[in-house]
Length: 220
Image 1 (cartoon, rainbow, N blue to C red):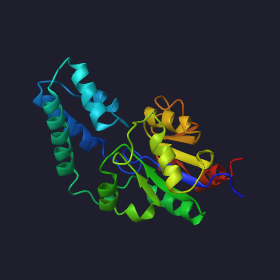
Image 2: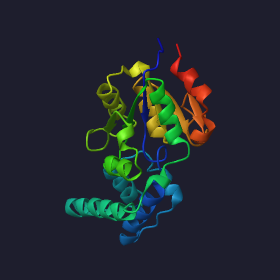
Image 3: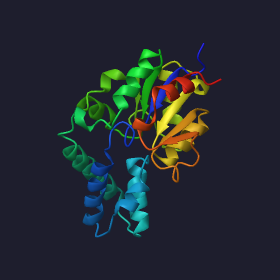
Image 4: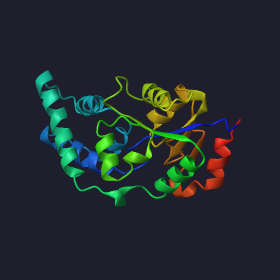
């Protein structure tokens, strides 16, 4: 019997590239506060919750806001982001995601999404992948942000697979740390320089061939 029985995918930067939309939405918020926000800043928000992201932006610029304004800014960021992703469609699936999903499902693997995003379901629906997953756990289901393993442990529970029988695809350092904390195999999607704690790192799914997936499934 194969040792691995489930694969959990992060959303942003793994299944779809929404980083550009998050960047623009956060940049609008920062500018409204008279602060700069560049791509280097945006990298530090990968895999981080919306609340924590705003806290970081405010801290970087020594900006204090009232509790009411904090909530207003969070709401405005989400409204801007949702407006930006309105026209997303299947063409925004990252390369070879559908091939990997088809291979895993063809080999009787359970597949889930484990994401900090509170918009995971509408995004998956827009890119026509929602019905491909056995479970979706996102920011509406969890209280602890990565690197806490809660999101991945919940995803494993929902697909009925033990944590030590799961593999995680992640593009953020915090996500890799969360996967390892959960006792799962962590496969980084992105830069090996950033994702040093991952068990394996690939630039994207086009580098992950079916032979490798088969090897991972049969890991002892």
